[in-house]
Image (cartoon, rainbow, N blue to C red):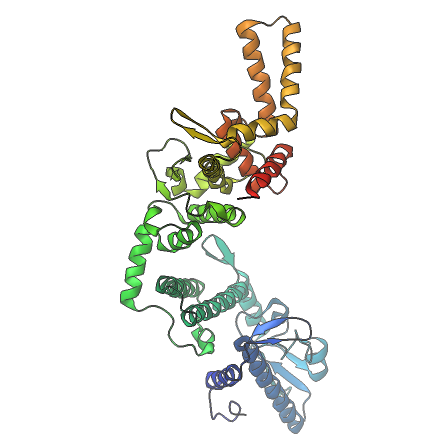
Amino acid sequence: MDIVTGAFDYNTVLRRVVTQLTNSGLRQIEYSSGYANRIEVAARRAVMTGLTQLSGKIAEYNAEKLGTEYFEVEWHAGARPTHTIWQGRVWSQQQLYDVCGLGTVTGLCGANCYHTYFPFVPGVSVRTYTDDWLDEQNRKESEPTEFRGKEYTLYEAKQRQRQMETAMRAQREKVQLLQKGGADPDDVMLARCKYQGQLDEYARFSKKMGLKQERERIYLDMKGRVAPGKISRKMVIKASSTDNLFEKSKLSKVMGIGKDKIDFSKVDEKSRKSVYNGIKKVFDKFPQLKGYTNKIIYDSDLKSIASSSSMHGVIKLSSYFSDYEKLKKKYEHYIKIGFSPLGTTADSIIVHEMGHQLDGYLTWKGIYGGKIEKYGVTRTSVAVRREVLQRLGYFDYTRAERADWTRMGYKGRELNDALDFSKKEFITKHISEYAYKNEREFFAECFSEYMTSKKPREAARIFGEILEEIMEGL
């Protein structure tokens, strides 16, 4: 009634309702259907829908007094597609139900519907919107506008706005929870800066689409200012542009090392996420590695895609990581020619390097044949490779191949070359061509497929069984 009488505006009433509900301890509303909404979303929908339905009842009362059964439905830009066919037109009271869906959740005056309707007296009233004008508006609204490589109609753009507002409310809540939980100030600042980034993107999107920003939807939670101040924001932007603070902070926590040990100086966003996700996946399964891999370096002079100094806990990333799409294309080519394992992706590259790190870790521990002696190192990967190949039947295969080549008259160097061809063919078929290079690459390639493929092949499965047996007691 406060809104209808004009005593208070819509947003003031809505903020008051949300405050009263949250003060009572409510954080979300659960419906009988099992669907749940945050309190501010549910409150906004309830107030809006109630107001619209009340306006409809007033319109019906006025129509009865005027002696008419016809109504003109209001028009607004960006209506959902199912509403564009009847908005702005004149309908009888029965047609409001039959055509416009009055009384249903998805119809006129239903949930989140902005339309209302007004009495229309044929022969006296003049339509606000002509059919030609409505058809032209529908045509204009159906023309898409591009933003960051994706096209949006007006309705789709407004829906995207709502999604962005929801994400920002969730981020505001995350900031508040971090503050209340006494989180690291850096983590709080990162969360606040992420929120600022969301606000900036929201503004850019709205401007591009020609839409009004509806920030009152974001601030319904009454949590006050969340975005960082200008000075703090400048500091974080500077840090994130040179040191990539966001990803470094998350990765350093996962790895148990300082942020200064991670160099993402020229690594692009998608590659940073790939590195983070891959390393986190490995550490989640094998937490024993925490602290062993102690440095990640960007090396523009590195010729290979990446490299690993497994006995010293260092991983190097090449310039390929400055362009994820280029990296992805390169790796997909490797898979196509059999150089890298089937079932893996560009995101498996860092997991391959972590396989080297695991090999180094186990070797230092003296596990499964790993030894560090005065005059050399015997890696764990030597024994693991031998065991995987044994279970695959590799040694029986090579003996049979030797006998076949010998019967065909091969001997000496020619026989050795022929056997090398057979061995390489076997390992390429079961793992990859790169796995044939040496026991270290064999270990890393098997590890990569075992950890990242949705359907690891026999060699990767055998490797996984052996690895889990090894790691069980550590």
